[in-house]
Amino acid sequence: MNTYISRRNLMSLAASTVAAGPLLQVNAQNQIVMKIAAATINDVQHFWMKSFQAAIENRTGGRIKVELYPASQLGAIPRMVEGTAMGTIECFATASSFLTSLDPRFEVFDVPGVIHDTPHAVKAFQDPEMRKLIFSFGGNRGLESISVFMHSPQNLVSRKPIRTLADLNGQKIRVLSTPLQMEPIKKLGGAPVPMPLSEVMPALQNGAIDGFIAASTVFSALKFYDAAKYQTQLPQWPLIVVIACNKAWLTKLPADLRAIVQEEAAKSEAAANEFGVQDITRARDVWTQNGGQLVSLSTDEAATFSKVVNQTATEIINKNTAAKGVFETYANIARKYK
Image (cartoon, rainbow, N blue to C red; front, side, top):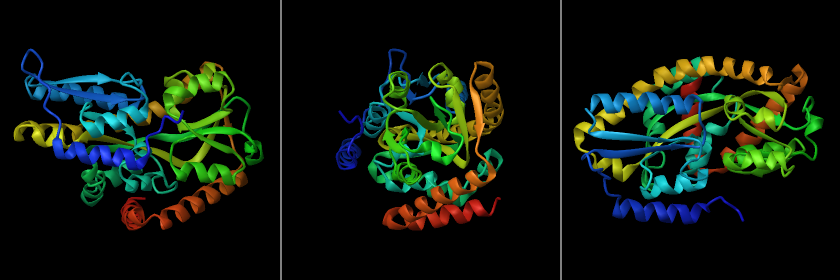
C-alpha cells in the first residue's frame, strides 16, 4: 500500500482543520503542551529541537511544556504531516520536500545548486525577504513555519558502490516524494522509489531497494553503515529543514507566548547551524570508522550529474505555476549571498 497521502486529500483535510482549529492541550500542571516530531534523531534538526525546548521552557517559566518525539515516534513522515495539518501534532521538523503535498511552493528548496553550503544558507535564510517568503508557504493549508536552515549535503548510500553515473543503471534508489528527485534519477538510469525514512533500513536489508538519497549526516546518525557500506558524495544538492507548526494552534496561543515561540525558534537556528557544520565532518568520520566507504565521482561525472539534475529540476519548476515565480525570488535572494 502506498504510504504517501494524496495531495488532494491532505489539502482538504488541512483546510477543514483550519476552519475548526485544534484545542490547546493543557496538562495537569496547567501547562500548554507543544509536541515536536521528526523522522530523524541525533542530527541537526534534533539538536534544534532540544535547543528550542530548553529555551522555551526556561523563558516561559514552564507555561509551555515541550515534548520531543524524534525517530518517527509519532508515525511515518506522511502521518506526521497529516498530524501537523490536523493539529494533533503542534510542530514538525522536516525536510521541506515532505510538505509539498500541502503547498507545492515548498518544492523550490529541492532545486540543487541554489544553496551551496551552511555558511551560504545562514546568510540567505537570515534575509528578511527570504524569511517572509518561506514563512508564507502552507499558510492556507494549516501550517505556519517558524524556522528554516540547511541540514547537510544530500548523498547516495548504496549496497554496491556507485563510482560512475553508469553504475546507477537499473538501481532502485529511494528518493524523497518529489519529482525534483524522482525525474533526475530516471534520466540518470536509476529507478526512483519514494519512501518514508522509517522504511528505508528494512528495504535495504531485504533488497527492496539498492540505495537511497538522504541528508548525509542521517546515514551515520541512524547507523545505515550496517546495511550498506558505500556513500557516494553528490555535488550541491543540500537538504533544507523547515520547522512547521499547526497554524491554528500557534494563533490560539496567548500573544506573549506566541511571540516567545517565534523568537526562540529563530534564535535556535544559530546553535543548530554551528552544530550542523561540525556534524557534517563528524558524520563522515563516524561513517568510515564503522566500515563505511566514501566514494567520489570524477570531476567530469560530477559535472554531468549537476547538469542533468539542475536542468531537470528547472524544467519541472518552470511547469509549476505556483512555484515558478517563487523560485525566481528564492534564487535571486540566495544569489546575493554567494
